Length: 365
Image (cartoon, rainbow, N blue to C red; front, side, top):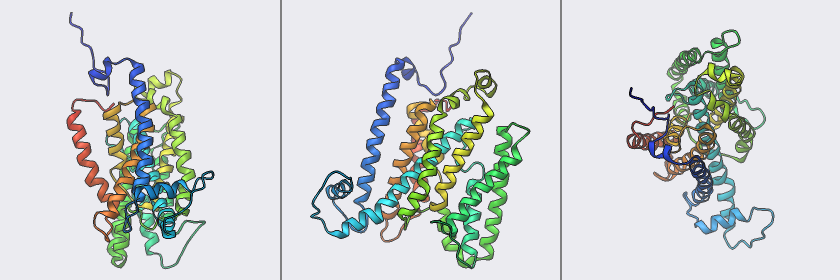
């Protein structure tokens, strides 16, 4: 009788042949290398713009902000303003948003075991888009704490849309994944149609609304970074801490329940955390597409599907990717700034297709 040996999900034969300790060490080295790459990307991005500043000068300006070293400043005082007040907040917000969208996409893909899942699956994008559109059209000014009308309404719209989807999909104490996805798609289409109708009625605000919908990080201030930082850090850490239950849930929800995982509780926590960081990300930057679906897949194709490494690796790769994309957005065609969502789609999709071609036959889950 012939025996068939099934190929492990998400692993090549070469990777399977390696001892577990070597595979584990390689992923740890990848985490360290990506952390160094992220730091280098932040410093390098500060050198680029309408005023070119040497890499060494940028490093010295940033290093001088640490509490202990005392460095004389031979550079012009305007460099401090350009780097610390204009470029650095924008770069850090891009890194935070990229990290948030990437790990949210990885979380949704793991929860639903669906390679097409992205951070906007449950109506976050359509809710935020409708909220931002209403904010552009209201004839008076609204602000709360450091949030203006557009980010405030976008955040409320995003969270409200997911709350409606969750309430529609809930059956007793369970949340069927298929029902949740279908409710998200249906509500998203409904809210998008309202947004389109408003755009048709109020064409004079069309340019500002369209630019927001395409995503951008221009005129970022420190107040925006400090506003989104707490929610993003909390959401990302919560998701990291649930990597093991998410690994177990890749088998089957019933098997996960038998292994002691409270599936519905884990699902609710992860959905809430992923939705929170996605809503916080889009409220200031608009709808930046492709990051949340391409980055987790690229990480999974290169380093495998183990959520303990997939989630932190996706966080770092997403941060680097969006910093690079935003740098290209405002340096390719000066003084015109390209919406960063255009750059992420233009650069990310071909790279993902290249990876998919090289790793063909590799299972996603």
